[in-house]
Length: 141
Length: 313
Image 1 (cartoon, helix red, strand yellow):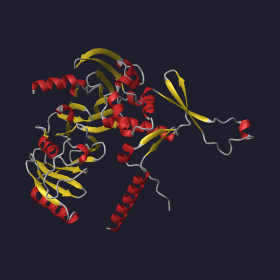
Image 2 (spheres, rainbow over the protein chains, first blue to last red):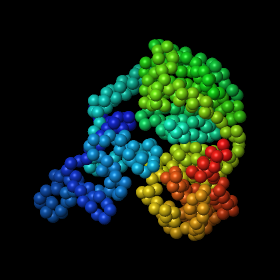
Image 3 (cartoon, chains in turn red, brown):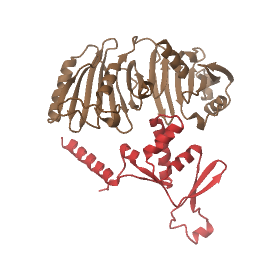
């Protein structure tokens, strides 16, 4: 049986804290901020194959002004809600509008390994347990 | 606190209600026959409005009795009380240990529509006796707030003429569509909301784009070029609602054989930046050459028109 991965509910996500990957290397290209993250070495990325075919060791991501703003806001202390609120104020957006933009961006950064979202794991597990119990109860009915 | 900032009007399918400014529509239906509208605050669902077309008025008292008995069965420790001063609604409030819930029903004979409104109060409940424990912040933290409940119920109204021009107000976009142009679809993307009204093959679209400081730079022609994926046939600058606006005419991108067969649509755009709303508005009309539609038919309000309306009121 597959083990359920604790996922954060929208409510928990607001209280979660985005933390930058400390191993990220930064650079600049014009007005863009470049973030480089090391790629996990695969079995074929070593000599002699790597001597014939040089594999890239890092993956880069360029951030525009908006991206840089959110990246800077991810200081390891601010919650997602605080970041969204600041972004909304800075650009005269409604909270929900800003939330959609910021969350989409944070999701992208997380998928690229530049960021992790730290939430309350126990709370998430508890929520999964409750959801399962509720599902079971409905099935029994 | 400024009332304008704490309240917002939502107008959907002729139904109008005032809700706290922080609530947002997350689920919507566009059919007047049956559908629903759900709103959330930052964390929880706060309102659910549902409607159904009915030819004759239902027995609202019986509906409420059914809800009452169902609640008594599901929440034996809870208490269900009727809500007084509920505008034109018949309403009751259930107080249980897990939260409070207000449920209201009404029938609108002019529209032949049964409307149900549910207000969950997830953050807390009224006192065990069913009495009201007032809270300091309006609707704060999802706790039960009698003022919010009453304000929402009393604010509800229906547009006077079901067949006349219809006003829509949602996601910060406020517009009036001409009669006979129902809402075809509503698209909500990050800082980009559009309402598309359809009549046969013609379309009128109202769009609201946020955060213009990041991308607009007061160059509407550039924005239009990007939107149209090329140069428009005709472009002119004008004043609209007291703001600098840009109007363009072009043709919708389509297959060449469709254009040769006369099936291609003409396109007109009007774009303006409202610095007070911090928003770029775009009105687009798609129409067949033999059935021209004016952009002015779709009245999109920004700061200037709202101020004028306020003064008139």
